[in-house]
Length: 402
Ligand SMILES: Nc1ncnc2c1ncn2[C@@H]1O[C@H](COP(=O)(O)OP(=O)(O)OP(=O)(O)O)[C@@H](O)[C@H]1O
Ligand SMILES: [Mg+2]
Image 1 (cartoon, protein in one colour):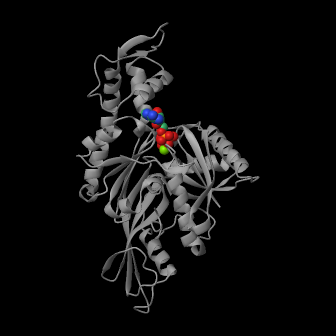
Image 2: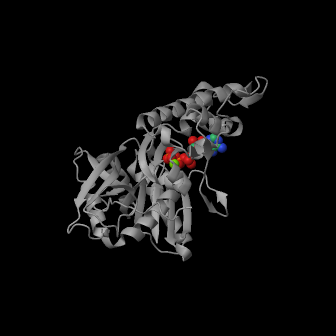
Image 3: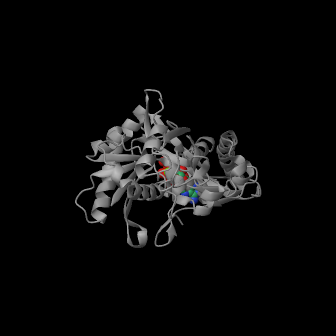
């Protein structure tokens, strides 16, 4: 059994799962609890964050009939994390013998042996592609023969203090972090299918206070970015510009909001309860949607710039996948498609409980499939005391999805 925890800005998600019959992932328990002490994806109150983690894990343990859950894999995201492509190399001696698991581990280790600034720590190294002699785009080199094994990996590092604070929040609750999972990778894995991975896709997970963007090319994570803006920024804009409190702004957004104001009649009226006013006053729904549209457009435009800068814009045949609560706004698909040069867009939320899509759980569900598949693949070589040592590579995580 593995347990993952995601400490979000508004909620902590805790999931326990295992590989069941037919190698299928079986979710044993899933709990969401209110999260306190986290703002804009960073911990601002350790004790409060730790209590939120404790509460989620106690409930989860109860739900699955265990007395304790002591070790977790922690999903981590934020602009403090960065990924870049790195290369590793290993000669195979004697020449042309079959490549082993150990060779693969060593070449992945070599790819992450480069130096990075002392204020950063390694989170994950995710192989993108192996090369055996002149053969490129090898996904599983074990068993192949050659004289030279190469790997291109996506290496993720994070600001040490940011990462340590998340680890500390778990430790203060009396548990250990076994490994970190990179949030944008997890969000992507929670919603992509094999065809998306093969054809190339960009996943946009717009949550409460951040938007994780991950680009998958040739079956692997090739690029990612975290934009520190989410649905709560939309609500904050509304609360400021309409002079109402956050809860009222959220009510209006969810009840009447739309990502595009075009097409909404100026005659359509809604009622807003403004601060200090005894009675609600009428306003045009169109104005509400114009405020929403302008913030959503800003996020979409930033994403377009990142996609263009990544150089992968032309190879994302499977288009765009939207996930996360903030993309539930009507016309989100249309807004992102227009901003991303007409790319096809669809909304996907993971299907887990009673066949009902679960909004805002892509990262937690993706992390579960990542951890279960890598622990299967890497169990003989992942014995180590600290998660830092286990910031490990993997090579067959994408197999068997769908
Ligand atoms: N129907 C809806 N229409 C518009 N926005 C919505 C809707 N439902 C939820 N949201 C917004 O989605 C956001 C929460 O989404 P989600 O649950 O994905 O966030 P999170 O994962 O907790 O946050 P983060 O990823 O930033 O840590 C909130 O800003 C909320 O206002
Ligand atoms: Mg989220």
